[in-house]
Image 1 (cartoon, rainbow, N blue to C red):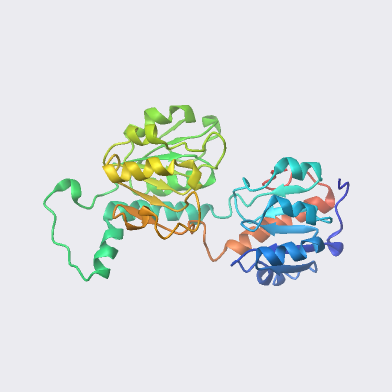
Image 2 (cartoon, rainbow, N blue to C red):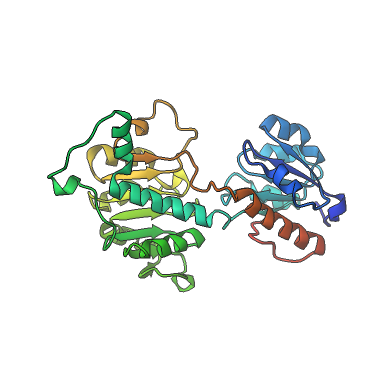
Length: 325
């Protein structure tokens, strides 16, 4: 078990991601800390024994711990940490922090973009454009585009992302209600904040239900058949959380039989979404490929947290920023 943290002059950082330019961005900081990037799981497994610090998200597998004799700290590139065996990390004295907050702006703006797209039928307009079809005017009021003013948005998880989404929604004159484990800590402009156990009674009020909660045992399959049945038939589900916060077969059935009007989904149970998934061809579904958190500032935002935590670790300061272990 590790008892001390190396000085920064002795550190080696491994950045591991399939796409993010972590090493190139870090090099511009001129920190003097030795570093390298692994672009694949295979390269990570090969070079991990060199690393004191690992900056990683999707490449992580818990069996890598057996090949990490020097590892002292893991900085997750994402906010989710369900992929890490926290007990095993503690047993080895390896610290863990996540990147919660780095995509606060991106995810909240993405959620609002999806809400606007669903309300204004932007997704079906794009479908019609690709078919060179000019849609005629609609006489059926229930099938027309809509306005957000006066509509109710239910935000499940009023953390950093959910609170900013509430702020954005209020700019469109929406009524915002939300859930939070401790409503007394809620900050922002939500009209009402309730404990999560009130969810089923809140769902019938909502025109849009946005998930911005973490994946925990309590939120796994939080939106199940019972929850979907509690929603209005005209309501939309906007999932900016982990796919497993939603019972996927129940959602598919609800979309097919008109239990709810539609959904915007950024994350599925299994990714990439299989080519034969029925979700692809549903006109009332808007899919983004787990890109809600994408932003040109992502690398810089993660590195701000990383360098702050390295400073705290070398000084023996507690706690870490976004500390998990």
